[in-house]
Length: 112
Image 1 (tube, rainbow, N blue to C red):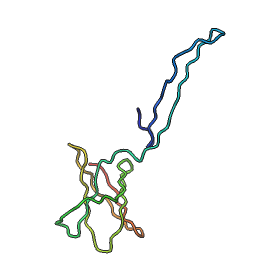
Image 2 (cartoon, rainbow, N blue to C red):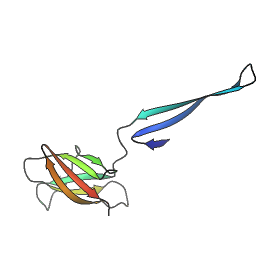
Image 3 (spheres, one colour):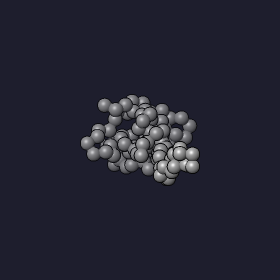
Image 4 (cartoon, rainbow, N blue to C red):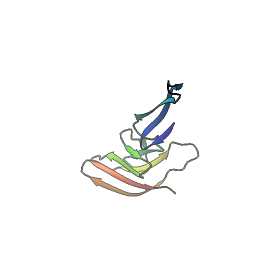
């Protein structure tokens, strides 16, 4: 199985080669595209009302580690953000910019 643009590609060979009456052979192969949500997340966005915490994961944040962009719902009060790595041995990237756009916050990140 190979992950390609958020879809899994599986190749099935469902029927063995059959010899046809004219001496030619026939093999049936099938290619199936199975939509998936996303690639596994590498980071979790955490936020807190104060810089010294406590920080909690934001389960509603849309983390796109491939694009280096995170979208979260904007809160009325000021929030402080940080990233937590979800893979053992990985370090979380640096947040380069935070932009508020209507009802959402967009964070752009860069891996270190």
